[in-house]
Amino acid sequence: MTINKHPDMMDPPIGKSVVGTSTKPLNELEKNVISTLDEDKVSDLAECLFTLNNRHYGPIAGAYVAVCTIEGKEWCVGQLNADRAKPLILFEDKVFNTPEEAQIEAVRLKEERGESVPCRNH
Image (cartoon, rainbow, N blue to C red):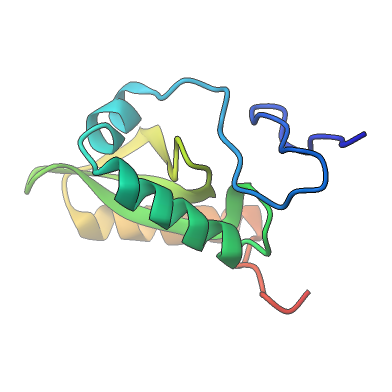
């Protein structure tokens, strides 16, 4: 029996190392950004993130990014997530007027949480 380490994700098939899918619905920012992307490319991105995350699905510790949500006007902080349905977790409470402000907040969040991007060798 597999124990799911991520309660908001579907259980993967037994004996399989596969990218999971979130059971948590997209928030409004995620709907606006992710729903406009090509599904095949999102799936490819999820596979890459899954590999980066040592073949585990879910949020990638320390992998915070600035994401443009309204072209040239609005950016938010996001976290890379090894998940076919939601490769980016976008934080609705971390929205800024410049990409630089979002990048500064992403770094601050990473430091505050004491996270680093996972090492592929463990």
